[in-house]
Image 1 (tube, helix red, strand yellow):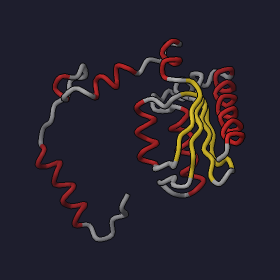
Image 2 (cartoon, one colour; image 1 turned 135 degrees about the vertical axis):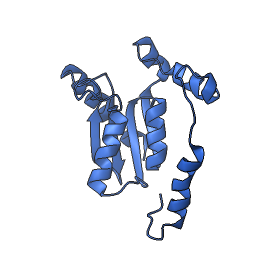
Image 3 (cartoon, one colour; image 1 turned 60 degrees about the vertical axis):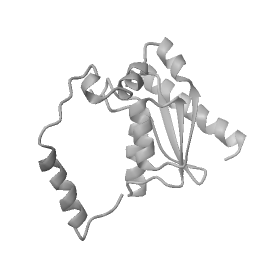
Length: 159
């Protein structure tokens, strides 16, 4: 993409976030997914309107793009976000295998507006037993058995 196209799509993401915010669908975030210069999905944040903490703009746009392309991977696609993706969205972006991310506002800008994800980054750096969310591993061998079954499954679809 060239600079003008990037600016066009990032402005679209910002406007999508603005519209969702004005319509009280969720927070001030928007995302657009583009493939070969064509918008294939866009969404605003929908956390409060559909009562789903995972309904961030980027995740909702990824879901829609996968539906449109009938695929669980978004190789060849780019994501434009009104704000730097949070840890959850960044994980979804990596899992979807998007080619590139372009964003406008920073995570510091979001934090000043009350959307502070820094604690998640700090928690991820800690061993599970030291995190503020109580975490305990049990029945590891039984859980690991699923992976052995997966490896043996001849008709598995790799991802």
